[in-house]
Length: 242
Image 1 (cartoon, rainbow, N blue to C red):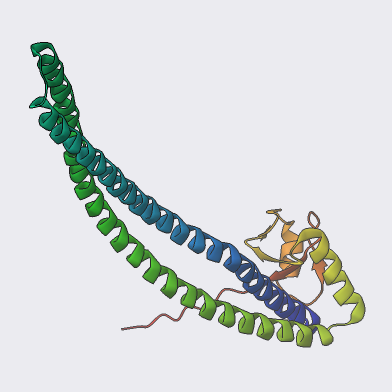
Image 2 (cartoon, rainbow, N blue to C red):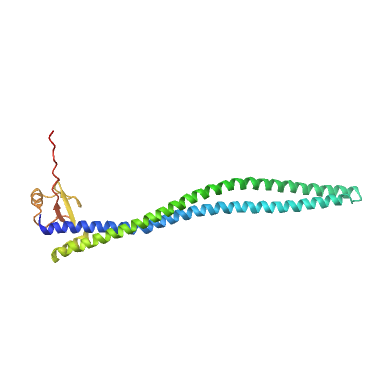
């Protein structure tokens, strides 16, 4: 194989590996944001459940206070009932007492309803607390894993960056400039050829061109995409004879 072609292939591999590591590094902040958003959503659901339970407790206390006032009013009316002088006043007082008793029964129903509601909400809060605890643990483990992955990717990127620099230093300046120009224009400067086809732009090469390319003894561009072509001979298959 042409020594410069071999270096270009090594340079492309280092460049591709570096880009892959950098792309994975760029994804980590968004993955962390997704993780934070998931935990925040679970926290919000737990806060909402706790808030609903707190509102139910407040409503129950309010109805119980109103109930206490109404019972005091009923006791007062019953005390006044013994002091009235006429049947008309007596009947009017009975109506007042009946009205207060209706309000008492209504408040008792509301207190009971809030007690039942709170019981259901307490179960919801317990479930949400369990879910949040599990999500919190997952969040902690995932953040740790992402931190370790980030360190690993940064180390890999540095290795590939140094490898790229080392390989690039051994390539003639004009050929390196050509590689960089094609890479900037096409994204990838090198293209493997298999079965006479450029594996990037899928151009089928002329048979004679493919025959010459398979020797890998010169720098050849793809007629369609201008990438530098190379050929990887198939790995020999060893047949074991029984």
